[in-house]
Length: 308
Image 1 (cartoon, one colour):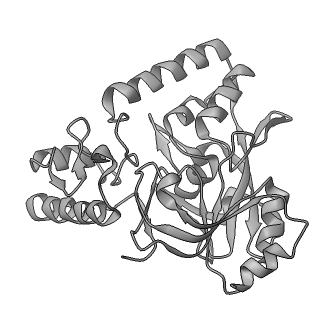
Image 2 (tube, helix red, strand yellow; image 1 turned 60 degrees about the horizontal axis):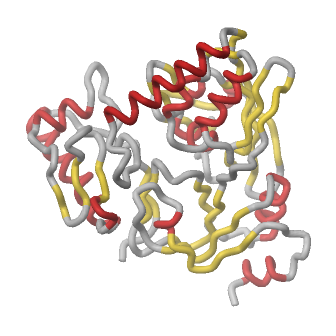
């Protein structure tokens, strides 16, 4: 038996659920990908910290929220996945700041702020992931980015310690966040954040959230398994325009297809596409755009795991 399993099974203090050979397709919005050796669903942040402390020092650990910006290869993940999404994740007012755990879905934070009379969080309703995922990639839409609103964050370290950090501790850019002097994710992960929003018209904010969600429905292929925008927008242009100009809308490899509705989306038609199909299609789109337009698109989507 693996040492991590022995450690967990002999630790009655743990309150979460430990899953073995867990299919990642159940936890990714692309609905494909291999299995993780182990996956842990923590009861809360303290339980997540306790579980991390129980793991051997060399155990690979991956944090996954709603799995909306992630591809796990068909061979799966060697190591342990922390499944960091919960419908019961804590949100509260801390003075004038909105505190939200990384496990909370971003749209819930948007609605929470609006119902308490704050404006400026509406864009979070357009981010189909968790707060942790939004922090990790500085997710944004409709002209706003996550870190524009971050006052401070709570980090969970590899050895189970919790510590607060300020935005100045990070290198923050378009769809990129890294802890200064270290690779983010190697030793620390986002556990929670404090956001600052302005006092405003909460009812108007709720109407704006409804409008933004309707805009997503009308412009994005949400009826099919997808992972949001696949590529970052290059400076002064849009990835979708470049992909469409190459005639790639509807182009398919296996069960993966460039969406006819939005060219920067790859859909897993009927859920039959493998992770390899998607990864190969990403590579084909990138090479085609580079050859025809001289623009090297950079993927927003993170790819992890081993090939089958």
